Image (cartoon, rainbow, N blue to C red; front, side):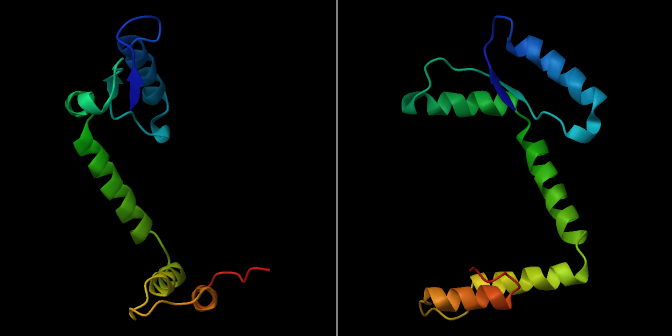
Length: 119
């Protein structure tokens, strides 16, 4: 999504049209999820207004759907060796023991999981 002014050459409507044309011609590049009008005086006091505006102009459901699809394709598309390596790295990063580990122990766990040893 992009934040754009409501008027001028780079207005929301002008850019929405041109960006839409670009993605229509290049569907492999993705797609915009929305175009948010630029708020001139954004502050902590106006955050609720910005959230409302964002929700009106951005298709949040499509963002979530695209993220879920990308997540599934990346997990489902890995070979067995990559899956095993990923599981070892997760195990090394999240030990079952609650005891604090030293830097050397963390590095050794990473090396066992397949990371290259630092020089």
